[in-house]
Length: 404
Image 1: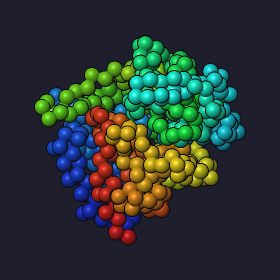
Image 2: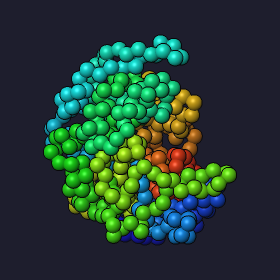
Image 3: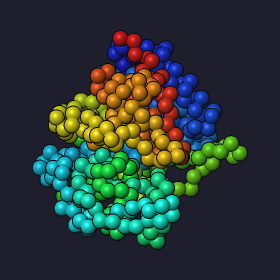
């Protein structure tokens, strides 16, 4: 992807460099220690800058090719991979997951009786592939809703040791669902299950499938489930921030400098699960493929109609707005959900400038991307600080730079 002047594709250089000020402000406020931001329009790079530090102790600045843990920005890649198999006819959207993982056949569901008591009931219907793609399966993360305290207590002993992805999925089938399939939108382990289904269908490891079918064709040379030894010095440290101590190094349970047993298709929420690492340059190539309706540099990953299907809203109105935590809902007002990402339905309702139909997602270590098909626009930032906090102003600063 060639770098050109912003004006040549309808953006203002002066306005675009307001991103510089925004990112420095984020560093000053403790939102991140450093990061990379990129913007592309009409298949051309118009902005690519790095900010701050990737290693505070050593005073090491972030570089444009710094490698970041992208956590849940793994999910869109997994969804593209499973849709490649959909195109080959291995399943339909309403195919039961139990066809590939029989243990999902007879799941139980948590039913809350009162504030403290729960009971288990049978599922009304089986979980489908579509449920996994849009997070209506009931395989919710244990951190989001108060009724899942019960489920979390059940899972603690079972998740104590390291597992392969297959072993992990089999454990999930022994835990009750947070709700009936299709009843709610609840963000969670659904994409991990998709990752395992990719292994079952392809008879390859998830890592090998992604490398052969997506990363190599798209030239995503730095994207993997771990960082090779010759690239260790490019991996950013991970931080958290407090007013008392400032930026504090996070001693993560995941060592991204060695090959993991569990390659988490969902992004590594469990301490032993490794989501993907990537660079801004790699991920923008993945995003450009999507904007191009499935193709980049002559390599077709998906068909045009498949990408169109993935990028439309798949949630009915009774499932909107998407809320993951009743006490702290994310900023999903005005958004629907496609097959792997949120989709903007109403810029006015969301309360931020944008284009209806734009789509994208983020990761727990404060990474984010969005794609706007109508404006032929892609933007992303990658930082390395937890817990998740969206830099919502980034979208505003990118859009205000459009001048054509």
